[in-house]
Image (cartoon, rainbow, N blue to C red; front, side):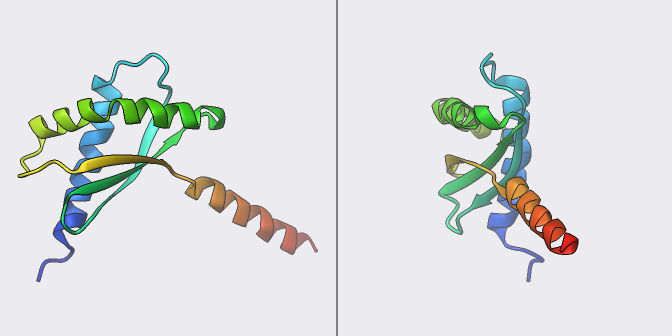
Length: 114
């Protein structure tokens, strides 16, 4: 048995390639510093959820809209780089784990202070 599922291996590969495409190939001046935090792929490899974080909190919605509008370009680039029978459809989401972690940290500091 493999150490982990094929969908996880494909997700890791897509994360690497999508990060590179956004960094080097996507030429939108409105797009700030964007990091691909995680990619999860369904077991049938038809859908990939891409979680991104933006440096500026207020630009999140605009960043997601830019990435959604560039989805077809990114899929086309993935088709050139990745040897898969079908490139998964991409959905972009804002990653909120950083805020969640800082909220927990803040709550723990409040408890410690009491």
